[in-house]
Length: 280
Length: 319
Image 1 (cartoon, chains in turn purple, red):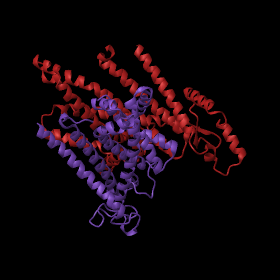
Image 2 (cartoon, chains in turn red, green):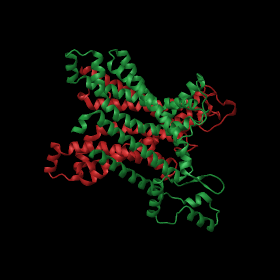
Image 3 (spheres, one colour):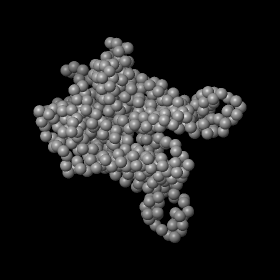
Image 4 (cartoon, chains in turn purple, blue):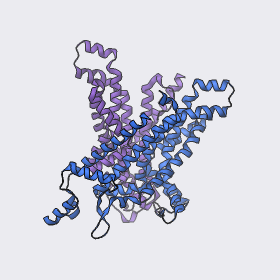
């Protein structure tokens, strides 16, 4: 039984690592080099079908889609990372304080989070964007705000679990300062739960970003973005279906890779507690 | 009964808070409404006149109560962008009115599709002793959950619209002209919304059923000689459906959000498209009302789920 479990766990982790590794590699290469210029137009090569010359074909301006997808992955991953960094940092701070100290502040924050949590993230992001205005910076800030509650919740529950643990009361007895208990003694022990939510948050951020760029209120041209490419491609679905498939499948690939990775990490973290069930 | 009153009170309080929050949020928006309507070249007299017309001179608290009492009486304000004719501004109510049925029908069809697909699939999956089927369903649901709804919409358009020619993409039929054609056209966007959600629900139901199947009462039912069918549908499924109901409530909220994006893909003239275009043109009265409206729907759905949950599971109210 045990060997079967660990075999399964490895499968998720390995598949996830391979898929995300490829994506990150493409994005990093894309920062320095792309096969073709992402803005060079070529009238003679409009709508070239995928071939060895143009791996994903060309678009309505004759631009190489593969190069643009590489750049687009970069944008998407950058935004996803920034969003998770903002909401994760805020989540650690607020989650640690509310979870450890409890009381009225905790109560208020939790009720607020409950109220916000029921709402679909893209809807909330739309609300924040409509208040702040469109654009890439506002997109990052609004998604950062939107994903904050999930991080606060997970960090808070870990802090509540650990605040009465024996080793913490020992530390308190020894006269360790509060800040040190919070961030040196407890925080590192919350990381296994935290990393899983980072992966999930990253995925949701990518989906929200590409959705909003698709709607035209996220990343603005000329910046390459997978979502924006999709909305451009939609008009040419009949003549050049590959134009839509390339950015679309790339998004699916990224999301799938990260969800496999998070599942793998979750199972690895669960260790013997894993019962083979798939949590949602 | 006492519970119901308490719940309704919370519902009203939440709506009040959301409306206040929405109003305050749009108060602090940088940029002057009057300048954005008239442009920078307008005369100060014209600006002052418009300011008076829109009631922008009163203090914020007074304006909030004017606005909210108007909303309660069905006066949703006027749009900053759309004009009825040269002299009259477009009332938001009229703007929203004919778009509402589109979004609601889309949501309803999606929900029906989700339930129709997810429940049989979940049961089949939980019962399957076939390893290949089990793994295949796992991969398929995992993959379909990773597809964003707008890309799925494009795939549906391509596959059903262009390859199979089941419908003409972009050739939307109004429900006033041809109800059958309208519902048929909505089937495809609904499919784009439903597929990932159905996958999630099926997965959820399967896990819930697998947990229930390990319970003592199932063993008891088997040992007293219940048929496998009766054990499955009479005992396991009924109990496994409890958490699924709550889950479907969450899914309803997701459907509303999904329809915002998918309406854009299929160029459906619904609430979502109006919201997006109003955000882009900063037509704030429309955005405010739409947000309030969507919030209302989401809260109402949660409220109904809560009630339904108590009806289905009497154990909760007796506790």
